[in-house]
Image (cartoon, rainbow, N blue to C red; front, side, top):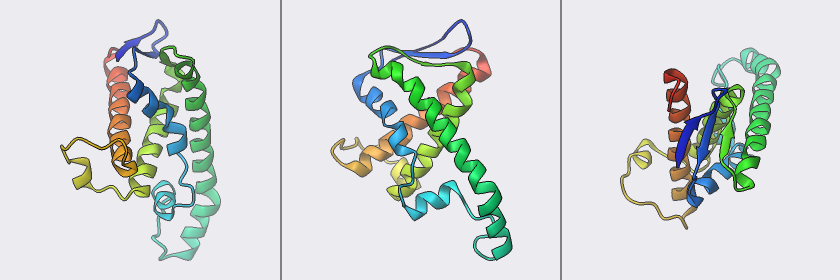
Length: 161
């Protein structure tokens, strides 16, 4: 995979190998907690930890809807950008979309980690993963999404990739 900056400062990922392309394309499906309480708690943590009903309720009423809207907007942006990859072209992330990508990638990593109960030990396991094992595939996705975040952040910081 090659990563370059375009004339507008956006990121262009070309020659994306099939396994990596499939992981990129899986981002939208990894964003939703789908009723998983642990994933929901990671995305919308109760600041009072259930110890102060008033604070918890205000959080649910005023903050959670805004967080949810931000997550949804990021998902729409990422899905739109993934259209070029679906069409077999290079994946282009316009500079104006980088924040949405960072948001969505972080969200996907949190949801996958919670959904599959991923531990720090799992993340540090150097053994090759079994792509037929859903949990091991999720751990691999978390790593790839983290590397993509790192590329975007580093590229923004340096102005280069």
